[in-house]
Amino acid sequence: MTSTRRLQEADFAAVEAMVNGYVEAGKTAGMLTLVSRDGELLHRYRAGFADIASRAPIREDTIFRIYSMTKPLTSVALLQFVERGLLDLDDPARRWIPALGKLEVYNEGALETDITVRQLLTHTAGFSYGFEPEKHPVDALYAEVWQAGIQQRSLEELMDALLQFPLLAQPGTLWHYSIATDICGYLVELLADMPFGDYLQAQFLDPLEMVDTAFEVSPDRVARFSTLYGPTEGDSLAVLETSDRSPFVPSLSGIPVRLHSGGGGLVSTAPDYWRFAQMMLNRGELNGRRIVEPATVDLMTRNQVDASLLPLSFNGIAAGEYRGYGFGLGYCITMDPQQTAAAGSRGDFGWGGMADTYCWVDPAENLVAILMQQYLPSLVQAGRKDFRDAVYASIRK
Image 1: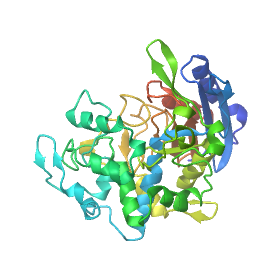
Image 2: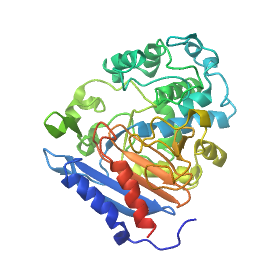
Image 3: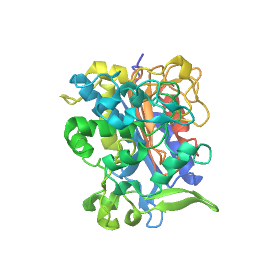
């Protein structure tokens, strides 16, 4: 049940202490947090820098690479076509992408069953991502594609490259975080008969007034784009990517952004992403504009993974602590808060990005919480877990 206690700024001292602690300890260059309840923005806090060298501070409208926080938008986009009756969750996806019917499984041969739309949305289709090339030959193949500069390929060209590789497992037999959401984005592009980015603009970004969310940073917004940091040998906050070297800034790099990646291609701000998350909390509607039906949101935010495939091997919250979570159609779902790695509620849902951004929605508390920073790789620090714990400590006093 949602508490009726009126929360004040002072109630979020634990969140501010957590943010300050991370910045002061050099665990991040800068961090921004946002917490809302009952649709009201209760707490916004920021500390540190968007760019250390110029001492440009984190601002409320700082633009961040949100990477995999793109995935929920892509999932909603595909489910809009389910609502329109143009496909079913258990349809074979090869009906629209024939290459999916010709795939083989590593060391096994031909597919035993078709890959379904539901399996693409739940990461149970058998694909991988290439994050561990030293551990599996299939991941090594993916890694070669990522290293070749994928922003210079169209979504169709990326699919042509990736759908040559074998699957890790037979469809429906393994939960494995993967490129499946990029395939969902490609499926949207085919169904809509328009570039994926154009579809998102028309169906989400414009209706939700997400004015700073895009697949690239326009010239008039570059000053608000955060630098990307991460650990290197001897430097815990090394510069990994500045605006003038970023594939997200074609006006400076001179290289057009051709790839509209449904798996990780967007940049955004905390206020923009809050509008999408609040729409999900409202079961598909924001300010009188309906994006999806309540029944679709219910499907997305309910575990869709068979118990035999749990626990997950990745939850987007804390490394190595996977019990108590399930996965819906694009979101990690808290199924049993007593088993999970971080504070939460049964039925809360969320996902994060590769640069350690994170958002979750808690219907039981009528809550949205967002963490923005630019530190890669994600989950090296425990910021997502610590943020969750601090938020719940604040609202459950």
